[in-house]
Image (cartoon, rainbow, N blue to C red):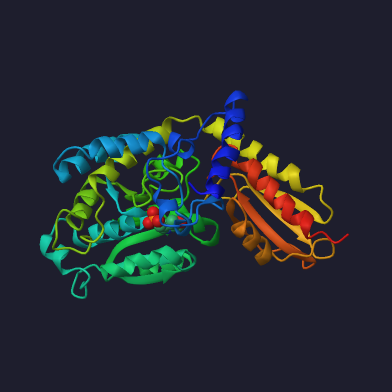
Length: 412
Ligand SMILES: *Cc1c(COP(=O)(O)O)cnc(C)c1O
């Protein structure tokens, strides 16, 4: 073990102990405290950091709990039929999330792609084999609100569909035709679209068109896992490796039985399809199930209170510094947990946001934080701190490091 890492382990141990003693729920998994037999992150010289930014793929998103690793390890010791694992785990997930059926996919992205494929092909294996060449399909169009035509929807293009963009209710009525295969909704952009869930669903039902909704990062609240199934969306897609803290490579496609069955034709273990490259191994399927079960059962109110207390620790460490102001922000839909925004004035603190994030990244321990735009022009910097991916006690390290950097750059 390198000296730097030894210091890190030593500095973490007493803090974790204190957290246990104070009655705050103890979340750390043993692997984060006990020195592992072989630590490949250190061995390969890869930077390890505290995640004060959030469950983003580029920074490896979330950490799996012990129960999830147990499910992965125990299921790795035997052979099973892949389809049977999807059947049985799918049934369990469907029961938890109030859907008719479910399958584990390679991330929410793959759920979106396979769900779209299902709407295009149904159970027709000839059609499955033709994707993404859907030129001569009766139905090959997906209707999307302009303001929902954003980012992750790109994955739908892999199926060969043509997007039809609409803004108003009148546009929507006009856009519907015998070529319409699916109506897509991006939950996170609900406030930006003129048409909301209920109207979208009503129009789809009236015209007998299936619907799909992307709720990838919209848990918590936990109820969102079933809310959109209850509301009547035919397919609901969510990430497994964000709030649920399953394997980062997993997601869930849930919804109508016939659509999930059709989606499976475009997925492994079959091979003459567009989804063969989106394999989820059996260990990850079990791992996601264990993570989901744990997530649904956990005390969400207690966790929210813990996040608030972690935010308070950081807030109290910085808010009295001259030129600093803070704000507790709860995003309206995605990543809905308490965040702390920290702003500072250029007149009092001579530090840009970029310098701050680099100093935190290069410090010991290394810390990744989010940034946000300044709210008034006199501010030279603004950070966004997300606490829900912190390990217990790490909020104290984050608080100390940000305070140090702000004080160091203070103009006296
Ligand atoms: C993260 C995200 C996705 C992709 O989810 P993965 O599980 O990483 O595939 C899709 N849509 C939205 C809105 C997201 O936030």
